[in-house]
Image 1 (cartoon, rainbow, N blue to C red):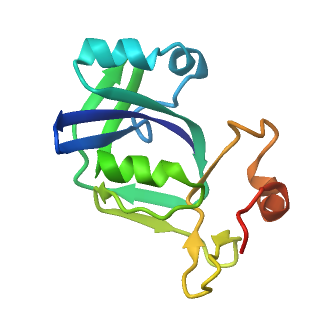
Image 2: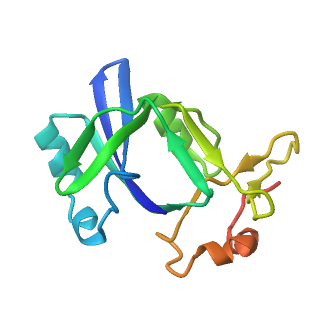
Length: 161
């Protein structure tokens, strides 16, 4: 299932949070409307510090449920629902290096993977933790599809280790 996010930074220092507004269940994120959004202009209209557009991604689980979601908003024709937030400093830290783990304050959710179907894992060098891939994007590799995920490790430029 495809989705995209409009991430909106609000609050006053030092308590600025980035709110994740996700199209899952609210909109199919039409590319023509999403790509037409100017994040700087939208931030000015909303009177917020920053708007970040998280390009279209695709959920890889077989079923996804989420509860205690927030308000549904329309951002220039893209309907989204609040599903979580993160402190701005943690948001920037997470984006500073690829494959950096971070936690968000997210509405309770449940990801269901059907027994016998593939699950994709990212295992850091310590080998003690495994991260389950929840979504992928074809934003960089336009040819990336669910069928190509088993070969993803060969396509990525992973950090040492």
